[in-house]
Image (cartoon, rainbow, N blue to C red; front, top):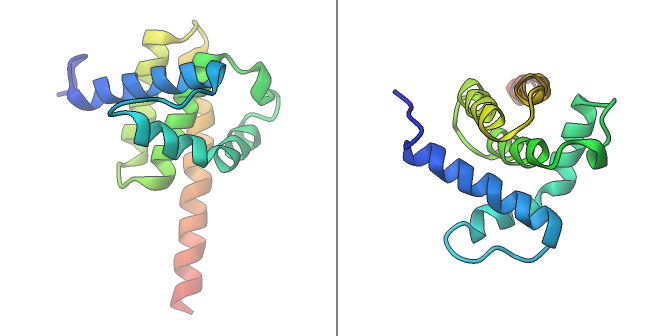
Length: 132
């Protein structure tokens, strides 16, 4: 059962905070989280394109910075980990409830559900192509 002290949750909180800080300073993160944030930053063009596609009414510059950090780490995880999409989305919603604004959980859920569906469709298309 997930708790607020779950090491995976705490790791995501730290990543979200580091990415949030990076968004303002553009100073590389030091220490243990450096690699995780660097990986997200290196993939930002692709991540941000997916976010813009899933939330066309919200340009990147208008998205709440906390929500944007949550979305970015979550999209990165959807793209580059074996964690089930529902787990990634659930964790992002929890972060949005804890750190975001009142509307953040619903916004984060909608954007990530759309992106997860896109990724799933692309993977299925790729698998079908490989079988031919």
